[in-house]
Image 1 (tube, rainbow, N blue to C red):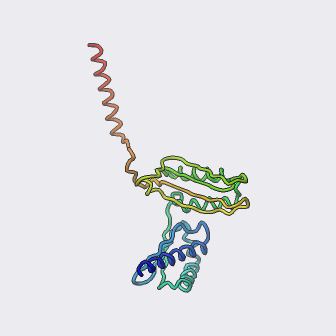
Image 2: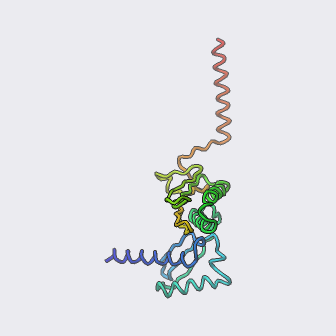
Image 3: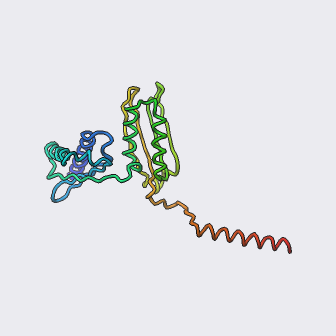
Length: 220
């Protein structure tokens, strides 16, 4: 009985998330989180465009709240907006941007779009980035392309700190899948070796001392 309730809960949660993403449009929302509290249902929307989501005087937000209440029978839903401060490090935002650019400019421009996006992320300070595109690019047969730079671990505990996102671009040539992986600069890498200025000075002084000792031994 508890398993059925859990499955229904997850199914309803997935329906709410998908409805919000489709109703707001591609590139508007990075993530949707649904929390059930004693005072009502709390919906957290992560976005880099809060003004578009809220609308003038909060009209769009109120309209979305009313639809969710009627369509999904949510109990006193309250929508919270969390603004993304650095959208270039959010993999879902980047994936949506690439998909929208492919739909607008066409699949022939896929290399330009991928390289420009990757360059922007690298300049922002990311440790690593990987962009994967799959589809008719631009040949008749479906192919996959990979664009990558920097450090991006794919296995072990370090892989968990990599932000990932995916999107779909519907172009004239066909459907193109977009997958993005980003390692932001604020993530802690356990196996990263950092060499400070003090350590460099100490190593240099040791090398000088050892070289002097070696020369003195050669003379004797």
